[in-house]
Image (cartoon, rainbow, N blue to C red; front, side, top):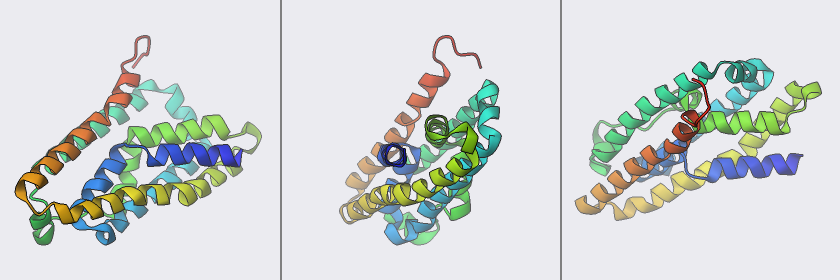
Length: 202
């Protein structure tokens, strides 16, 4: 079970989604080192979510579709605003003046309105948690998230940091920012497809 859970977390963590698009953009804008608090916040937020969901909140989310829908709407509003900020960012010049990368607490709090984080945690709990040992399995999931998830998201921040050296030209920077903003918006589509699927009640 541990190997299967690790593979599940690897795929869920390393594939594109709101967190990874934000890390790629942050790495390009602020560099890898200044993006570390963001990565710690993502991992820590997912760990706390795994523990709380594994210990009972998952049942609430399953029984209250409107609760889940509210998470999607909240995340979408925030991410659309963030996408606009990324698209219109001044990039490296802005980072050098007044802009700040996302901190630990903000990144951790965002996981609670991140549809992909909910899908990953709920999927892991449902697929790999045993009813007779739900508490222990939630702890195991938390450990795997740190061990597998953190290196996975680090790759995205490192990729952004690598691209940083090529973004000193305004045209290239503008194209990069709009691409990142578009990918961030596109990452919302799977969640909305699931939310608005025929036969699902909100």
